[in-house]
Image (cartoon, rainbow, N blue to C red; front, top):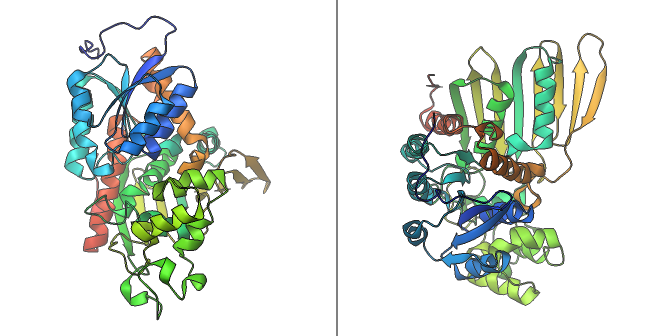
Length: 429
């Protein structure tokens, strides 16, 4: 179906000129996508909307010549000629800009999750469909070399029919404390359920690997450990004052002061805490901000462990475990087929052939598992795919269309409903 271009995108771009991008939300994720897009030489950021003065100033340095706004609504009113917009605001603030910029005719790169409610997510999907614009939700795990390698093994028929999948997301003990106890995603009413905020990647990934829609969901989990009743005797409200800090696995002092001198860890997670790069600056941030709080004295309510059971159309089943009580590392997956099995760790995949008994270990991934290291190459490949789609007009470069992205979110909400009601939830096609 063809759609006439909107006034926002009508002015032609001379062949060979960079694609023009708008950036809404210049925090960690938005900056990652926009900076890489510009670094390719294929795109330039011409305008940024960011209310935080420090992040806005940093974006201005990264994108010289870009006009900077403190509110996306002002940017929308001006609607500068551009090819697409990157939306990476806080999760609960996705719907309004996504719907508005779709109406204005911009193609959209939208950070996951799409939204924090089913109604908002449906509105986004409907808006982009009505406008005829492309939407790429940042399910970056689809794009990693590791995922594409695993998918190629399955599609080759080496495993036969996929019967079941076992998938683990090891959040990492300090990451759980950083993001989901002390940080921005600690409360459902301020962000979203843990399953949506952290694991919408994984539910989408399993569906991509299985290649079929989910039909049944059940789930169990809770906030088990990071609660007031588990607070050690004598613990203080702030790690800097705590007499038992040195023996606590979740010491903010150990975590954040330990980032100093490590470029990767200064980029994340320390950047979420402070711009300071001195012990005195870090300690001041821990004293004055949320990241120095005792993990047993926070206002968090999201789960720290959860399991989800899934049944797909055709009968394939999957089990998914998210837990904060692990090392911080790649996801682990076992895939069981009728002719073979695969065991993967995000970098390597060992394939066992049931006919010959032969095992072959493939090296499929190279990069680190997290946002700070590019999600195993997924961040870069997602942006490349989006730029390819913009350059050619071919939506096939984007590996999940709006309906597919919406489906993975609906699975997350169904799992949450199942967890809260001790029921099995049924999804229809």
